[in-house]
Amino acid sequence: MFRATRAEVRLSKIRNNMVKIRHTLPETVKLMAVVKADGYGHGDAEAARMAEQAGADVLAVAYLNEALRLRSKGITLPILILTPIYPQEIMFALEHDLMLTVTSAEWFKEMRAYRHHSCGKPLKVHVKLDTGLGRLGMKTREEWEELVPWLKADDVIVDGFYTHFATAGKEDTTFMKRQYSRFLDMMGWCEDSGVHVNLYHCAGSAAALRFPELAMDMVRIGAAMFGFYPERLVSSVRLEPALSLYSSLMQVKLLRKGECIGYDNSYQAKEDEWIGTVPIGYADGWSQSLQGTEMLVNGQRVPVVGKICMDQLMVRLPGPCEPGTEVALIGAQGEDCITFAELAAHLGSVPQEISTAISSRVTRIYKE
Image (cartoon, rainbow, N blue to C red; front, side, top):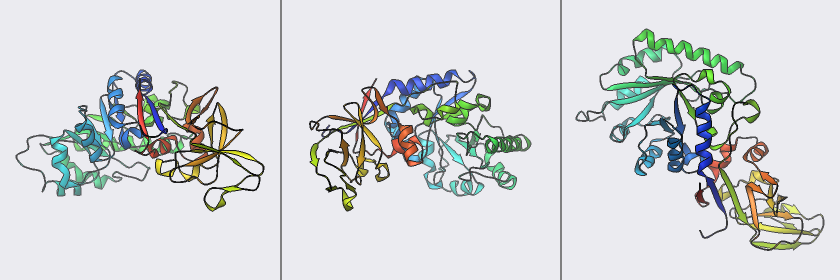
């Protein structure tokens, strides 16, 4: 490690979060661990191994390259790719035993030209339905009927049929219930068409924790595995964030009243003030939008002042401090704690936007 800025990941918290979630579900429900985006910034293989130890049956990622990376790191659990791959990439999926999301008959038509006839492995797919999120998936019965002949092929296994809720983390459940009702109708398409589906699933982290009755055959746990979930709406379980972020003061200076710091003279001292420089910036994922948030130095909250730079930022200190003094950007110090939820509220976003933004320049240190 060549710089003081580092992210500390407590693997036991990832595992414990998944164990707690597992205990809230009926025994027959399968557990899918979503480890896309490098495990939400925590490390993909590390998160996958903790999920497996906690009893996860399946993994999920967003893209083919993420799945191949997990396989290269020795991860053997079944993996679902949540975003449709290009038809010409089909042999990568078959060779590495990957399950694919499909949303159209056109994909199958194109894929057949690239599938080698000598490959005897069946293609495992999960059909994605759009019930209201408006992102990916088929919406109409006509689209489904076009897909049915391809799903009935001898070398295709329909392992899953799924949708995703748009508002599962909101207090008002009206729209989510509408999506659920729509999905139940779509499930009837399978029975009417004679298509056998192994697993029906609709619940991600928030829905699975708030409404275990929506678990169906499997739940998809992503954000909650890392301690991100709508706490005020969930009474069944308490989860813990697994990642903390620390750095140190690299320089401390006295700023005289009226002097400015930061690009564009973005901060002017109202009185004589002590300013500390911290070696983390927007190239590390600490966005300029986080100006005005707080960090912990010697257990006290200190505000970020001036525009955040590419490689450093400045904080206003309560008094002189020694260079090398530890700074907590996320996590506990003394009796206080800076949380992902607090920072996300400042951004008007979600905790996982912050964790996934922490770049590879920041060393991950893994602890039990």
